[in-house]
Amino acid sequence: MTKALATKKRVGVLMGGLSAERDISMRSGLAVYQGLQELGYNVALVDVGKDIVDVIKKEKVKIAFLALHGGTGENGAIQGLLDVIGIPYTGSGVLASALAMDKEASKKIFMYHGLSVAPFIVVSQGPKVKGKKTPGPGTMNPDFPLPWVVKPTTEGSSIGVSIVKEESGLKAAVDKAFSFGPRVIVEKFIKGRELHIAVVGGRVLGGVEVRPSLEFYNYEAKYTSGLTEYIIPPEIDEAVYENTKGMALKTFQALGCSGAARVDFIVEEGSNTPYVLEVNTLPGMTTTSLLPKIAASAGMDFKALIEEILRLAVKEKE
Image (cartoon, rainbow, N blue to C red; front, side):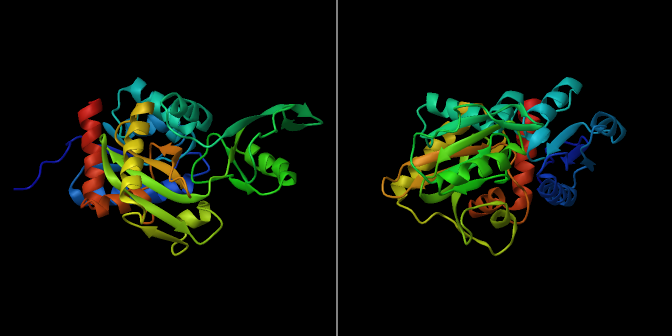
């Protein structure tokens, strides 16, 4: 017997947007759109711009599948807009989306819930001096040893991230990160294995260990085929893996996430302590993306994954 569709309403795949991750979002959106079409859904492809409300009305969209990454697509803004106009959508709601996108806010919540995070400081832009913005006074003094990881507080896909190995390189790295926003995280570099755990509908599907051939898992390593080795399941001690999966679920719940999310960790070499890096509330859905890889290892192919994400939205938000 053929499985019933999650909804007969017109589904709009929202992609593109105005963030620095627009290109990746376009790839995610096209993959989701094609998959939903093949499953028999009434689906429209929507490139998100400032006229998004008019486009949603024109396309007669009744439920949104969010394939947006970064910026207003992932920080709660589009979620709030959809709430106001009464359109159910996939993924987390306004608050969880906003918290997950802000690395400073999410780290503080993780700490409150007893989850391990790397030591960090936040650097904010000071007043303009001769037309240029500078770090505020006394804010660039990490009290933990080098190397340091410098990143914008509100970007994904490792955009604007630098690894600083000498103190003299800190200002340039911070200035680079400032080009993406007024607050920057400087955190201790944790040497270890990078694990990404998938949570769908409050259930842990599994994880993947990423081994980039570059210095770290940066934008190029994430989206260029062949530059990263993906180990499924991760080649780590079973007890450590189970602990990390348990922490992923706790992290998901701490932010109040829903739908599908990916929780990223560094498992420290030697101590085997999993440190939470971040939560991605709208994980990539491209052919090289991690969530589909993890789902496939759990017996859920790409079409089954996107249909489950849609079903969760129908169940939770309609």
